[in-house]
Length: 291
Length: 311
Image (cartoon, rainbow over all chains, first blue to last red):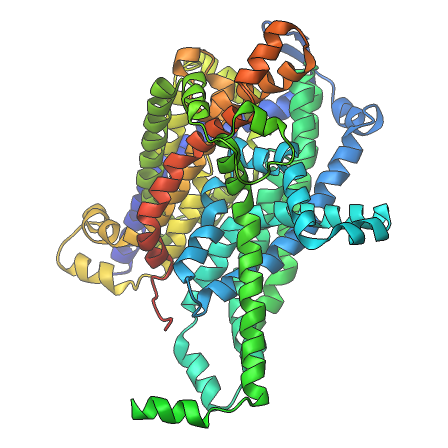
């Protein structure tokens, strides 16, 4: 009997491997192979660019990235800072928007279509253009026209206006990057059974209490998922300064080895940061959602 | 009717009513404000795409063009070779999306319902494949594709999707896994009792039940592939095979350079290809996705509302 069960387990495992086989092949060819190659580049120096013969130089490129190249570190820090600030704002706005479009509001389907525009347009060149200088200038002016009259503009110092512009600027970027997050939060909100809210209403809990005592704890696993998604999306976004810089080093300055080393430094940082976030937040979140 | 009249008569302006009204006012102001931030770039593009050169240059005309023109749209369609690039993009997008839907739903099932040694580690590698920026791998990948003789074809974009890789492939594996985790195992147990093997169970019972996740993945995969210009930009070098979004960067470049030159010829070009044309071209790239989204919007929302407990 026992042997038979072992056999069954073995069979199950084999079927499992059969199911993931396509991915295993794909991962090997399209991810593992390039990863190994790129790692090798990062530890070596290419001697002949036509045949790609190289010699190992150890950590030289990694040292160069920090010590010789003066632009890498500032770009790196700016990317990290931007991603973190944007993450907080994205989380806040997308949670807020998800909550209001989950309520009974007039023209709900219209608002939903509008708020989901970034989901379908939130990648690619068009987004970069929308958020790029061309339109940014325009959109800032429009918002400013709406918010301030001429007298106000003249009365306040220019620094303050610049700050407001900067803020509006960031909000536009943030809102346009929060499509998938709104989607995730909305899915989470839909998953909370309405009977819980009904029970709370019977117990005379107000909207505010319902939010803090029901919505937030039950949403916490989704919030963690969204934090991780937002971090990864922010770090790997193609308009990220550090990634742009890494590409520039590779293709315009033809320093493949240095660019690979920079890529790996950045990537190690992402992995470390995201897994630490996950580890530190998982326990309290499990506790909150199982209360 | 009587009830209604009574309501009207007994209704007083109590602090509670005022509070409710204020709440609504704030809510809708915020909704409209946020919606404006989202829509504003579109409205701006739409308006400008109908402006003539003189209207574009006239700073006092912001929202309503003095004389509308459709010429920008025809010029833009010509400039981005709409008749070939559109179908190229459609082909690549549909094929890659098909690849993602097929492979990711299949692979995710293996990760969810079977125990095998190394499962945790391998699923960790799925996440790894999402997290690693494609830019870090672009050089070795280019070498790989050029050895396979795939450079210049659509294969680098399409083939990886059939293996659960490609543009954000890992995210779809993750999405499908979330769905399978919510399925009760009794479904498969019943099928096993009826003598279905695991593959038949998957194709006959599990796959047909994935509708809503399929739809969400379809929309996302289509949008991401349609918009992508990084990978096509690396591998497609023949103008005839260009994809739609690839045309935009070169167009913007061209536009920027026009301003610098001051010869008679470039001035004429600048008058012909002004902001309006660029805006029309950008909109042309977006419109197919918008149409798809408007068509699927209701179903898409239902997919998200799978659990359907609201209201």
